[in-house]
Image (cartoon, rainbow, N blue to C red; front, side, top):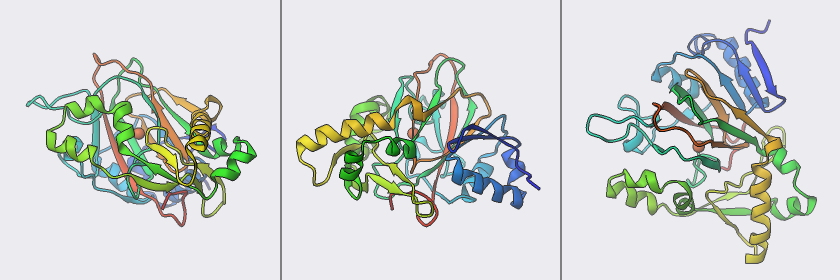
Length: 293
Ligand SMILES: [Fe+2]
């Protein structure tokens, strides 16, 4: 008998699961059902959660190894696996976490600028602004399927060059201005990395575009003209409205997603309302998930 109550919000893309994650953690059968569900629905929403940081870490560890974050400037003071996004400040005036600005954040996939991105992510909204800040996810399997056949043929098997410097130019200069100069220098000097621009699910064989517009600068082996023609096609398909889901975030929402086959973005949000969100990232197995490794 099924123990997990869920609703499909978008078929084979987004599901909402009922119940408390802290209870699921102690129910191996329900966790197995959840893992199976996540294979079909790469975005899962849980509402009205009351989660300790340790529980969020344990939950992620059930899917893949939760990773410690090297960014001390945005890390939880309690757990190195948890980072904060917040408008709140400590007593010394520094922000609790990253991305303290209210500007919208454009389509991206987390950690594409790293050589080995942890593609699983969980975001827990403890205190969420009432105005703005909606989060969107876009299905990159659907985006790939919608590409013209000639574009599919050109990009399959190709490698992209991904640069953190591009992302900094697009949406991080404000964040950098709040960092110590040593941290800012370290971030600016991250080397470029290489990933396939089409990821293939190891079990289903489905193909997803892996083309983060905030970091992908070129496809290796393409001429400048080819890059200038193909990259905008991939970026447009990846963020198309018909492949995306819009989520109005409420206090207590836990959002679980797979960065290998989705992108996400966030609307502009108000800065005169408090925000505290906690994120964990975890390393999914390339034998079971669509990952760039
Ligand atoms: Fe993100």
